[in-house]
Image (tube, rainbow, N blue to C red; front, side, top):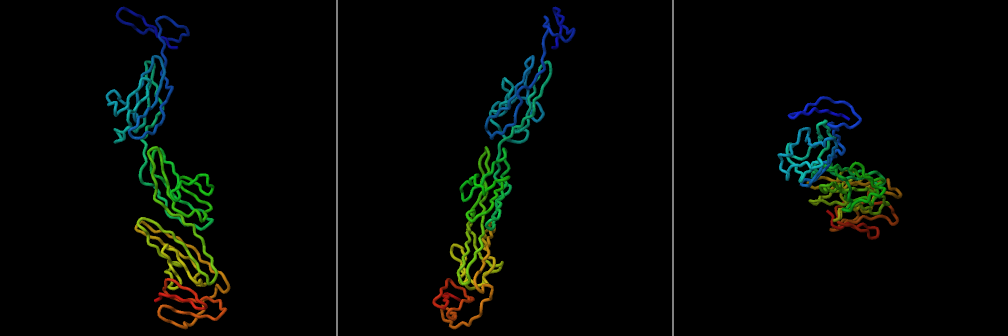
Length: 360
């Protein structure tokens, strides 16, 4: 202990000595350096909410508590208690209503408490007061993805800037994805689907949330492509789902070229039908949906199976051409396919004759 001896006179007192002493003496006073026993911690608070930065100290005599804001003394005595913080009796700093604003006015800052008595000074660790925030715009929006069955699909998303850091989840067709599904993995905002299956096709959106609220990204479509394999002479059908606001236009192509005239029918639901498939129909078919906001593309391969599927279509003479129909004939039992170039709405086979009404 430190002891100070005083010689008292009727008018004043003088300090005459200081030394270590184990026993208590008359006219001696014990001094203890202040010590922070409860340091303030970082807090994140919504605008308009109350907040407290805790601080407690001990010492002899009992220390007084002052606060620093960004390293400068915080003069709470001259502040409006309704908009500025006050020091509570035990030393904590209390904010009635956290406010944003310019750097010099905002409550968002780095704070520290200082305990002081006649024996010395102690300063706490720094603590930051952050105002909770969540911006509107996603840093990375998910985009349309297409993969083949069995491949890995990755839907990218980077949430808006926020404090605290927003949590990211995903929805498929408006329903929250079950995190227990082993095919789905969420990693750093990304959604990884492996292996992708046909039923994974759909519309996905990224959800960002923190204490401020919730933000939802724009929707992105995942297309799982399946190659189509048909027998020579059969019909093939490709499906293309397209949706958007505004509603997109849809076009089909084969091997990046316009569809040939003839046995190709685009239905009102945007699906593509190919009648009486020949070897020449083999290739990759692409559906392109486009509106003023962007373009989405999906494609799949058509494989033709069967005897002589690799042969070119044989040329046959047009036997009869009449208004409203064209008829191609073949010998009974003949298995070769016929190629005809007509623009038509539909076609049908009657015996050995192919009818294609509404041609030009």
